[in-house]
Image (tube, rainbow, N blue to C red; front, side, top):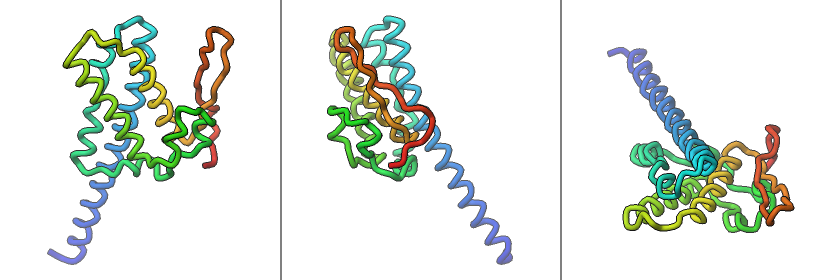
Length: 170
């Protein structure tokens, strides 16, 4: 083979590897967003906690780990306090890397699935509420947006929402 052919082969392999990393990154992001949307819609539809836990997905995350993906490629920055708007329950995650946050959420999903396998009669409502908030936090971090707490007068039900689409500056 010629030097030009060797260079082309190297370029082709590296480009294919780059596309594969980008595809995995997008798949993990979509899985996280999909789990968040699934919990939201399942709760809205009145589906039970055990069924919600059974429906949570982790295939893309497991595939990314098996392929050796650096989850920090999803977002290089660490979690900033600006992202979670001073919400006390998220303060412990300040400064965490994207990889650590993502592994935390999938560890929670794995734990819920194990609990479900042992005893399907467990009340998962509080655990799912926490998982939902953690998924919101991760999506806000990945999208470089702020969470906003809107105070509600009814029964102290605060709502956590995203800031508008303009990006934050961490």
